[in-house]
Amino acid sequence: MSRRLRPAVFHVGVLAVVCAVAAPAVAQRGPTAPPVPAAAPRMSSGKPDLSGVWEWPYVPDMTRSARNQKGYPDPPFTAAGLADWKSYDAANGDYTGSCMPYGLNRSFNAPYPMQIV
Image 1 (tube, rainbow, N blue to C red):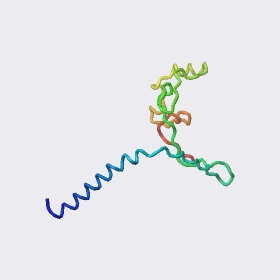
Image 2: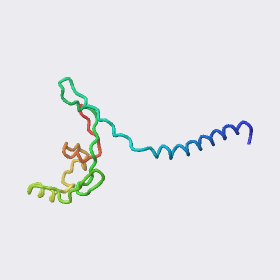
Image 3: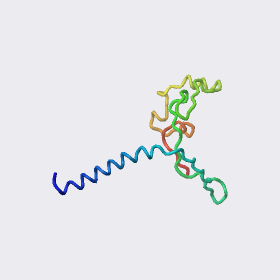
Image 4: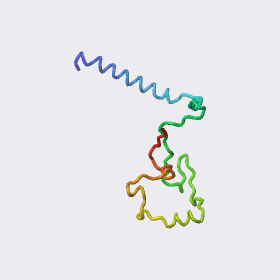
């Protein structure tokens, strides 16, 4: 090994040892205090300012339970809603299947964000 390369190898080795020793120490920190929620930004009228990009909770299947989601195996439908649910056929004019925009209600279960201007 050349004389020029030895200091670089030494410094890389020291850096590797420091990182290996510091990683477990960082992982062993005690519980931290929860962040203090900031006040909601307000408009000049005093109402909350909800403008910005909002991320929906993506729920691809509302009948199954998942992380941060309680599923309902039998969604609570009215008689007319249950009839529509059972007679639904995506081949008969499904908006997203036809590359058309879907409505606000359907966007709640989509993985896309929403922007309020």
